[in-house]
Image 1: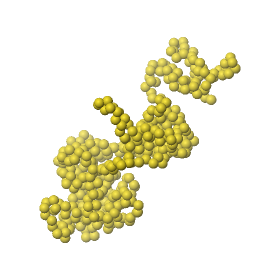
Image 2: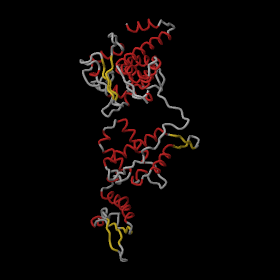
Image 3: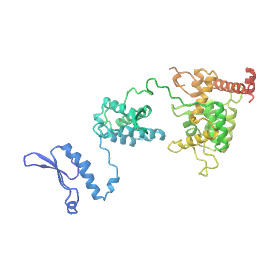
Image 4: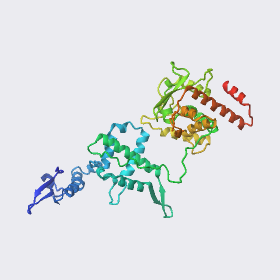
Amino acid sequence: MKLPRYCRLKSLKNGRRGYFFEPPTWARNEDCPVTAEALGEDYATALNRTKNILLPAFDSWRSGGLTDMVPASPVPGTFDWLVGVFKANHRWREIDFKTQRLYDQGLALFANHELNDGSRAGSKQIADFSKAFVDAVYANLLVVQYKDADGNIVKRERRRFANAAMTACRRAWFVGQRAQETKVPAINPFSRMGLKSRAPGQAVRETPTATWEELVAFRQAAKRLGYHSIATAALLTWEWLQREEHIFGVFEIEHYRPKERPNSVRIMHPKNGEEAWWPLVDENSVLLFPELMAELDALKDSVASGLAFRRDHAHRRSPTPLPWITERKDLRYLRHVVKKIIIAAGLRNELSFTSFRHGGFTEGADSDLTDAELRAAGRHRSRLQLPTYAKRTRKQLIVAAKKRREERARTTLLSEGVLAPHSSIVSSNRHA
């Protein structure tokens, strides 16, 4: 068996063999504090003391303490090593920055968990992992306890964080198994754990939904503060039910009314990879989204190519408008600005950019859109996401847009104390 540096196997007087640590002669002549030492007859014990105690101390003396600043490489076959294999794989680089950050937190939460023997879970060999071991660690990660100001012990469940950690570990195992199939067991102990999104009896956590009036107030505040692109993007997410990752990270100005299809816009959903062309006019050439189209037409005149929504505010640092999303697919600065606009508009603090997308879905439901029409608008395959698949047609999109504008006009008249006949609302909407 291979021995580490300065570790020797020698014959003993009793006829057996033992291990010894012997620093080089030049180190002894320079008064090295790490001296020769008998390590006993057990290979594992000798290996552990040499690699984890004696050699690090010797290298620290030789380098004047510089090696103490270098993190130790994880032991091959451990969970820490598996995490390193995962992050070195090309699949890690294909993950967006937001998900990478969540995976980092989840992997660290599991790896740094202290076991009953005082060691870290990350230092254990993955060959020894069992489903029972993973379930036991998960149960401990699920509940965190701390002392309050009065010294009382308070227990709090962190189910979402613990579930995310198990998801990250499961992904790391699968990627590691494909990259190192001879070293990573084929059975993934993090699979099929039966994770529950909430505790029994716990209420469903819903994303706050914005109203049309709140969207109007938000857009007015955004324009007043100089964030015209965010004002337009908020109306877009309301009308076309797009996620912020798509609006700021995928939607390019060329997708809107290209020469070959001047009455349509190309919509691509990064989450499910679906792509579609959304009609902008109906069969009578009446605009379906007149307010949004007017702003996008003006935007198309100012942006030559690339991502449509950029940091166009006058007080930006860069002389040229940069995209709101960074190269690492990070939208934290955008969310900071959105929260700033929400506060300036005097809206509820719990609102976010996603609230306007949810508001668009709610408006669609209030407009008596069918399940098929809602799925066509949101590009969802299943009724559970908004389990049968429905065909999405151009007619469904046109009918959905008309219904929503009719409901919006009716609600506005009701709030003003005036209720016009339904036919007049449709007529006025057509000429809007």
